[in-house]
Image 1 (cartoon, chains in turn cyan, orange):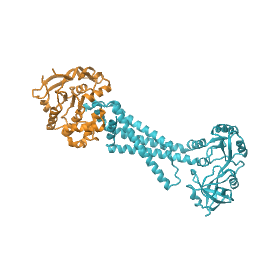
Image 2 (spheres, chains in turn red, brown; image 1 turned 135 degrees about the vertical axis):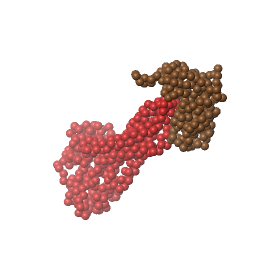
Image 3 (cartoon, each protein chain N blue to C red; image 1 turned 90 degrees about the vertical axis):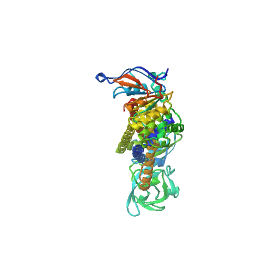
Image 4 (cartoon, rainbow over the protein chains, first blue to last red; image 1 turned 180 degrees about the vertical axis):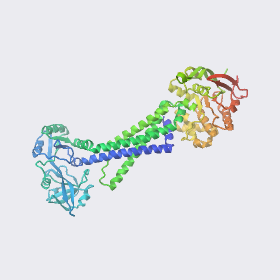
Length: 378
Length: 238
């Protein structure tokens, strides 16, 4: 069979014009599909930035919370109740909220403030400069050096700013795994200072961060929190909830889905049509092969190989092109959110397989229809 | 007594349905012997090509038996019939049907590749057949760069590369000028025909009739006469 597949390969690649058209069609389609879905994946990843950066196992919150940014304050007793639950190793409060910072030049900049538990500093970021103990100093804040860092006028250690008429001082430069979605710098401070600096409603705990004694305790803790009238989600569940919100309750998911489907249709049309033309142009030759003694399964194997080879090559080129484009875009646009994940690679692969399947089905049908007698009849 | 390479009896074939139904072959009996070059001639629509297709195992008859080398080919399964054609029957098509994207030697190697010979061995063997047809120095060229006569010789090399006992040629001179056509068929008679091979040719070309062993005339789906060629020197005219 290897010789027959080599024959199929030569018939395909030696027809340079058709092969190029097929590759361009599939590469373009894969590029668009991966670009769309990677953009979506990047947006979803950034939407969960706080969850990823804090990194705790279980998040307790009000059941109405849809995204990490839209917090609903919980009363202090929830923290005490959670701490007393079976299976809880420890539980600490977390504050997240927005504020306006007045910079040295007098301009204002919106920021996201994360208030870490004063005792444990659970969820603290890795410091690039400074000591974490300095966060307990007067007016102390850590500033995250991410793609939004420049919006704080690239602060150095000791840089001062105003936050709601309070003085703030940069005592550490930090780095985190993921930048946020909304293009604002992130400041870390202690939970108590965050409450002092930012006006709040009566209930102030944004989240209770919980670490179970063992992973097996997670379900039990979730049940107990539910009984309390609140919601406990694992890190993955919370990220999934945030993704679901953006996917199904905003226009984002549907719009990107439409773009992805359109890319798929474009790829399918170009590739299917070109492959069909390729088969059609060689149809008499396939008929001659049949007459000479090629079996049906050998002809089907040739067509499937040609379609599969083209699809996989186009897939590889499309992925490479998309990765290069994303890398180039991120060099110029630090806020560019696209990221290639196994999920969108798999989706792209499945769609390419469908394109190859449909194209080869059309080709196989045509080749099986041709009778060697037609070759004799001319 | 000569051995029949092809032995067909009572072959019937219809095409179409209802009022458009056409009786293409009407109880045709035919034998083609080893060592002979048999022509099937007749006007257009007389059933020559249909008969050739039935005899070579690519068009199933509606009635009758066709034996090639003693095998009733139409009792074979589709796959076995394909294998039988690959091993026993060589085809030279009217328009050659060479693959333009393959080199000449790769075209000749196709039957060997279908017989699952390794690629390099198939190419090496195909080169020998190109040498037989005098095109050794054209091995790496694309068929479109060859003349019509050269393409026909490539098609012949491809047809004989799998050592077939029966060689089927459909209008082998139709696309060639008179001298080239005559030269090609002469070449086939002198270099391809042998005592272990039978060649069946469908042709309109009267200029090559003198090269035939026997000429079978068809009209309206029937054989209306068989002419043994007095000029034949190589075929057995018994």
